[in-house]
Length: 69
Image (cartoon, rainbow, N blue to C red; front, side):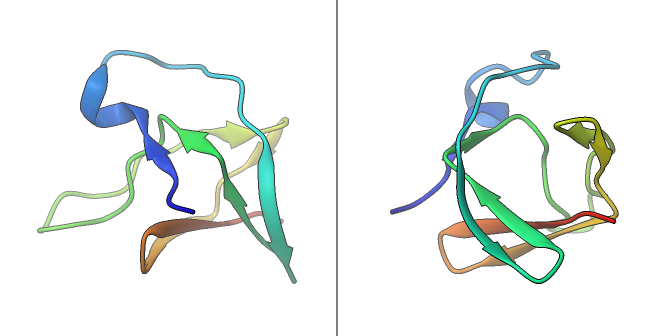
């Protein structure tokens, strides 16, 4: 299942409810996201997931893995 990339639909949205779809060490994937990940020279968005700061974001196939502290 691919993450729904809400940032393409509404780039000004700053908050969304999402479900964590997987956890691996300090990284999570989500059902949907407004946090853009690094691509084509554009930096990743900063923000939080459940109050935890996003340390990095990385594409993983059709998913985006967010590393949290």
